[in-house]
Structure formats: structure tokens, C-alpha cells
Amino acid sequence: MIRMRHLLICLPWCWLPMAASAQVSATSDYLARMDRDGDGRVSLSEYQQWMSYAFDARDADGDGVLAAAELPGGKGAPISRASHLQILAQRFQRQDANRDGYLSARELAAPPL
Image 1 (tube, rainbow, N blue to C red):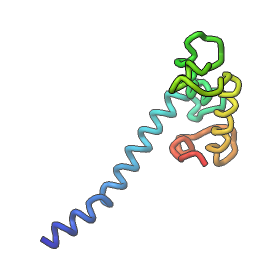
Image 2 (image 1 turned 90 degrees about the vertical axis):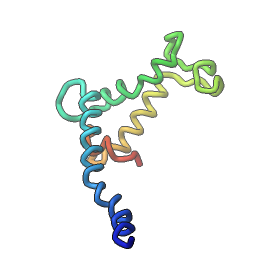
Image 3 (image 1 turned 135 degrees about the vertical axis):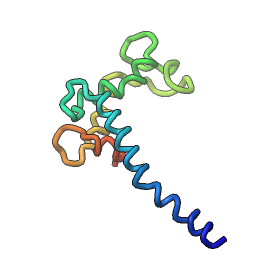
Image 4 (image 1 turned 180 degrees about the vertical axis):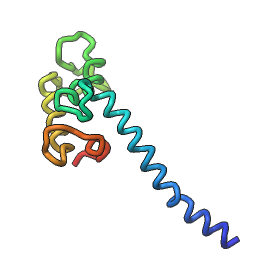
């Protein structure tokens, strides 16, 4: 009985290396989809382009502004595409830990500060 309890306590820790490996692999796949020019890193423009899918999907009339009716819940202040891109640029800057102007797979996997 004690051995079984010990096994159950230790088992989650045994899986951590495999989980980390799977996460890095998934992040690499995510980077590959965002990396339009195939250079192994994500530029600000690639990041903004990829991360704008939700904005584009919600902008039903294609005017570059999310009006209240196009926002979740149907209310809120309008959001322009320029404002949206500026917010994404700020997020990109926070994730660019080494300040080289690009996001690596490791930087993409890290939560933004």
C-alpha cells in the first residue's frame, strides 16, 4: 500500500520531462505556422498578421473598425485596426525577451510579462 501511494505521488513528476518536450514541439509547430518567410523566427509583422485572425473574423463589414455590435457581448467602445495592431506590438515587445526584434519558439512559449 505504501509503495502504491509513493508511486502515485512520484508519477506526475516522472511525466514532466515528456510534457515539456511535447510543449516545445507544439510551440515549434505554432512558430512554423506564424513564420511566413521560413527564417525560424517571428517578426512583428508576422506576429501581427497571425494574431489578427480574430479581428478580421469579427469585422463583418470590413471597415477596419470593430463596432460595438461586432464585439463579444455586442457592446463596448469601437476598436480600430490601428489600435489593435498597436496592442499587438506592445505584447510582442514584452515577449521579445532578448530584444532582437524577433520571437523565437522559446519566447513564443513563455507567457507575456
